[in-house]
Image (cartoon, rainbow, N blue to C red; front, side, top):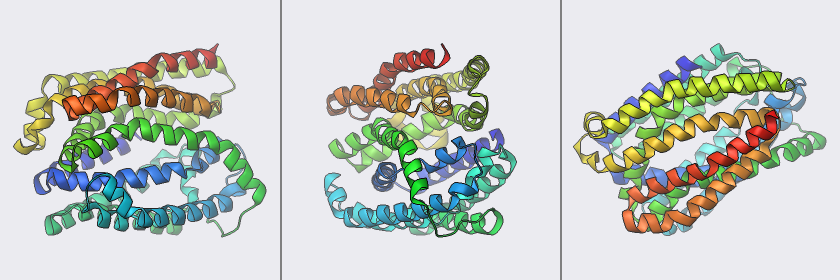
Length: 392
């Protein structure tokens, strides 16, 4: 998993570097609007099926058909709403150009619904070697298609078509090489069980979206697509290197935590080791970005992106704190306390909502960075309170 995350982020890093020199901040902003809309609809309709399949200690086959049917229906619903809401969303962001990219990106959720849900067994069975090959091939193909199209089209549409190509390849591989294969059949009782367990995942996802993307929405609405493109690239440049170490550990240890969840002392020791190891990884990276932001921006992105330097320093502090303290989330999921994550993100949203608009109006994208940092500082005490409840 370390090699996988490292490889994909190196590819992602190269992709951003090349695209930043081909496309303008406005093009990134247009794709950012489409991504925000797609992410919101995916989260609002999230069933929590993947988390459910990992949590369940029963045979994967029991819920496989139901999972696939639910995914297909969900994908159709998301695509439908993306298409009919394309004009209202473009008007909200005062960006008529974004309506066409919103319609095209509607293809993505429709296709995702047909992916074989058996891919979740890589995590469930701790088979991270196969997960590595599977994800790396898809991610690399997506990046290659995106860069080739960007060079030809010089447009934000290249990002969308690259995304679509990756999903198509994932469907093909998941059906050719991954077993068991689902059938178009479902049981009502299975759906009820999934929905009942997944309601906290859905609610948490909505809150998490507002928590993580609220600053993007406000920047895009109050400022413009240029500022949104600038802010999103600053966010990626600051958080991608920092959060990756934590994300690796979260993905690996969630199924491990599930297996040892009945032994609270062992679970606590494992969590503390993860916290220490995460800190060792992210703190040095954070210091480098914080101390040399101008040099990093000029070298990686070029002179036209130099405006992001001030907000980059704020966001890297946010990224370090978030990476370390987010280690609690897989623990809460492992002990089936999804509602803790929901409450934590709700508190963060409230903190963000109070300060984001005045800060953005007064300080632009720098204000958005401050709002993100403040909102995370507010949730840290809540995280430790719930950890105490789990381990006591």
